[in-house]
Image (cartoon, rainbow, N blue to C red; front, side, top):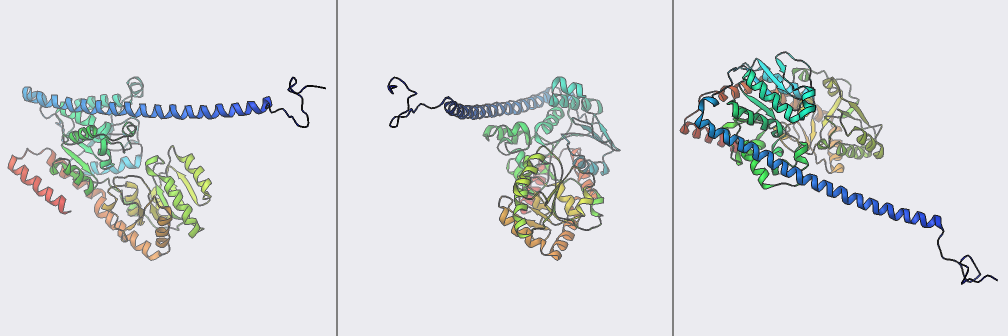
Length: 482
């Protein structure tokens, strides 16, 4: 009879082998290894992210310090070699602008009023890629080969320098603080050309060193920093003009030491075709327009639509635009069970026609300056449903031209939207009021006249100290009262 002590394969009625089978042991060991591997990957991912953020913070400090020191050097040399720093903007009817213009309509909203201004005949543009040709606009882009060789930003800087020296424009204007506005500031100071910073996204570009802005490098910092914020504010004070979208940005800059005479509120312009749209049948209750990127938070919009479905099973929402998040958003719509309620229309050139087919415009961004998409929708007689962020309050009066919502609270937002859509008369009246408000604020002729005032004051002889102080005090009082 086999001995259980000497034969592990023996299985009697009272003794069974507890040794696991090789297959079971393999599955167990494989599972443990997979868990350990995931933990190691998570640790490495966290480490790489923190290392990347640390390097980004130091790189931003280096860039800001380098620009500040270079400008200081230019100011010092101005005293010793004044002829070298004579005003080089010898063509008063030509300006140079630079930026990353990903959207043709957004570009048009800014360039059209510049060309409509009496003081400007030509706009020179330095950007990374070719845009549609327009009368009065001349592109001076760096070549693709140069961008591949030295990098996109250095190539843009070189093209801006060359164009500024050759064409001698009356001013250099950069959209967003980094890198475009800083490039203009640096080049303009060395060439003696006035500079303008277009703060299109609002103070978020400067707050805490720009960590909350859309700029890829600034967002990688992850943490705010006092030194970076101080350097940002110092450099902002060096521009001859800063163009903002509303009173909040103006107050922010004034509190950080920017002279009020250097701050102007000028929006992008809304083309006349948006004011002239003819209302059609409305297959969409809500419409959103914009790039499908993180900052626009379309995930919040889909969550709101899912809540609205419980109140209005036939709710219809259109999303106009394209971007890297489209696939993820379509998957989210499927998960929420609202695929048949949300239509992704992609990038379109007939936005005004689509706006005429909706009842209300909705925006759920995390931050904004003054949304051009919102202005266009309001010009097309749509009430705006937006969060109370940025400079949106310049145009939206709650209950008069639209309605504020908390985009982070889908249920509450759905209640307010449902109440508005149930009141057809209120929607129509708000739309008419919205159109009139935008016409008075952002029509092409209105914005062009504001630019004429800026360019006229930009090149006028410097005021004496007393006159300058009086003017600053007057504008400051006006800013505080408003």
